[in-house]
Image 1 (cartoon, helix red, strand yellow):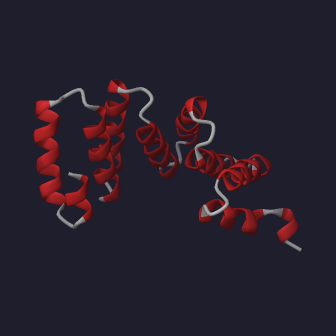
Image 2 (cartoon, helix red, strand yellow):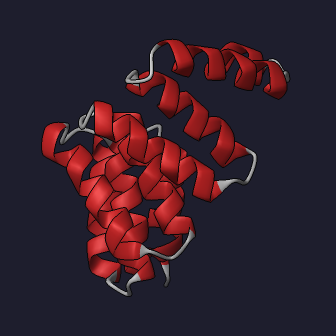
Length: 145
């Protein structure tokens, strides 16, 4: 289904996912892919519901936590976003995306120093990860001179 979506056939991808969910209603992966497609198409409420279903069937579904956190971040529900990024870090402390996401949450909440630390950690884990590097360059006090 994901390959169909990425190839530009969103409707075919959704049909495949509907059949897969009907056949395997407790498969977290299917709900995670559906949530991703919904999120990409701008249906954040639908995406959040799909990610919550994915997490119901697999609490450690990393991508569902990350994307659900991103949905909450975009909706300015910062505490819920932080919760999901922290859950990822509780079982994968090397997740660059979780460190980056929690940095975005801290920044939105006005905790610039914590945000910089989170982005720094993301950069240490993956020096090629551009979003964290860009934020560090933009918001780091030593780069503001």
